[in-house]
Length: 215
Image 1: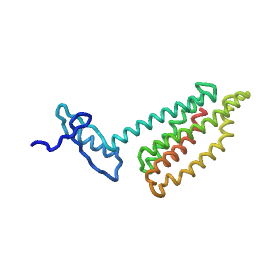
Image 2: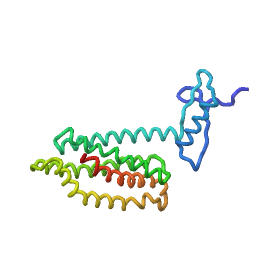
Image 3: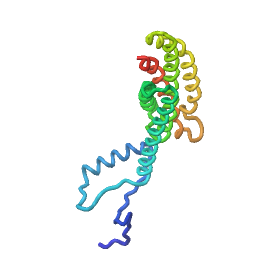
Image 4: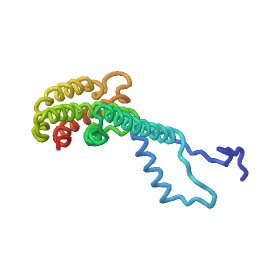
């Protein structure tokens, strides 16, 4: 049997296997396909498998988002170093960033959303918001300590004084993001993961920041 057409990609012969799916996240589809191929298909010598289409696009977007996330954290750190005049103090503030990821994952899990492009953008937004709460606490405590107050008392006073503005900004942000998280209107399904990531991350990070950062 002689092929009627021979396709090439990057100068190599290629056979494209395509499919359209719905009702299931792309990552789940590819996981099932990859597992099935590994169990049932034995490639002859010189043959390889490569993912393309939306899977390739998704991987590229995720790599760029993760790169942007790393740059954002670095820029936040350098700004805080300048602000506090210390290389160590900003580390305690950046410690609050991973705490927000707990809420992100829980929020997406409860609403059955996935970690996609929009939820990753929500994480980048979230990191700036979460750092703000820690800055409010650390900055007030440092001023109190420089004024002669004991460090432990300065942290307790910072928590007492800054609790109200932290809660006010948190509730205001949650209220603003609820319409996005509920997914109302045209294209709502696309935006909902962003809102849910921010709402879930803000709730857990606010609670945990008030406990972990002073410690």
